[in-house]
Image 1 (tube, helix red, strand yellow):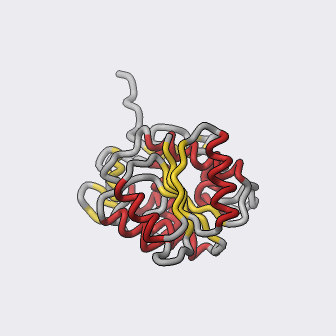
Image 2: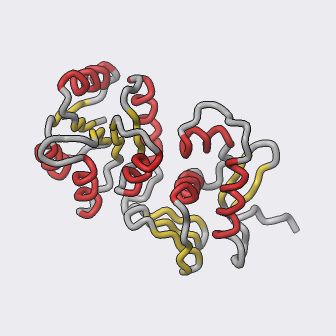
Image 3: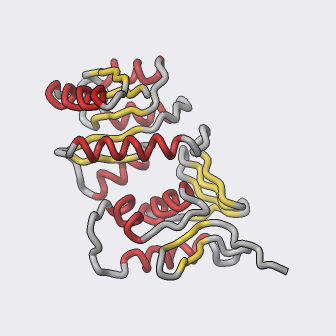
Length: 229
């Protein structure tokens, strides 16, 4: 597996590269935005690890250029900017994941492994489709039966995660960790509220209902199984 690291801090860049090589990855390293963009466009990579603040060209500009050029290599953004709005901005620009500095290398490695697994089933054109529900991850457009559905940022992230795991049971813990980046249960109804709003938008007025609650387990997105005759 071939990973491109675009990071201007030498100590951080070497720390990441050394750890990845120890785990069997081939690593290319760029220390400024212009070189990083050139390497990302010219050479194939399985993952790009991209610092948000870079000299010559910032990370979000690199990311937008990659996506507008049709390059769909999974990108993990690194940044000390960890507010919710910052993360949403990075994901909306086309990022697949967002890791806040400082971070543990083990967490970065785990996120790389998750993206590589997703890449086995993720369409190259950035389109996710479940029945007549479609999500264009390039334009952040969601449609059902051709009708545009307007989602709030958090609703979009929940639906994206559910569509990436279509047909599978997604637990509350999985949603808390992937969408809210909580590694604990806040003991609130935050998930129930967002799921209810999302279900109202993608299922109300459409047939069949796609967002199913699996009692005692979580949620599953997909067409209901046909009942036996």
